[in-house]
Amino acid sequence: MAAEPPPAEGSEPAPVPRAPSAYGPSIIGTTLVMRGELTLDEDLIIEGTFDGNVIDGAHALSIGTFASVKATVRSDSADIAGTVEGDFNGTGTVYVRRTAHVIGEIRAERLCVEDGTNLEHAVLSGRISRAEDR
Image 1: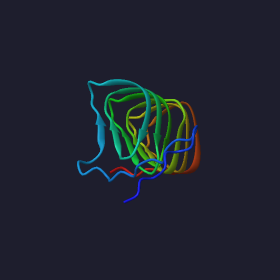
Image 2: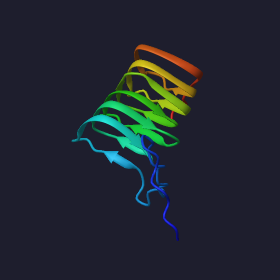
Image 3: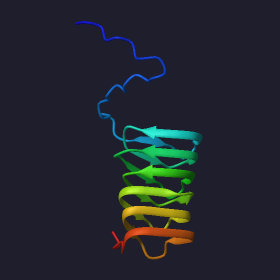
């Protein structure tokens, strides 16, 4: 097999495709505190504390009941049950649970908000519906 020529100066090599994880979603556990930027290639569950940016292409993001997220988030689908402070952009369905505390803007193709959700200075946009009790 012939070797490919090196990338031109100033350009980045093409990303290597990755197989889906055989172990399920990645998890930021309850005792973890993370800061920075996350770019995801698989589903993510945040149960701890995260401060930064989350860029999650076509994957699901879950923010647990006791999680605290201060971030700008771009995700496909999401389930928010904890505290989120910042702008949240979903290209799919975003569920906001009654245990959630949202400070910021949530935009999504479809928003499902449970009764009793704490929306503080929140701006919601998208097709908004009431989430039925599960």
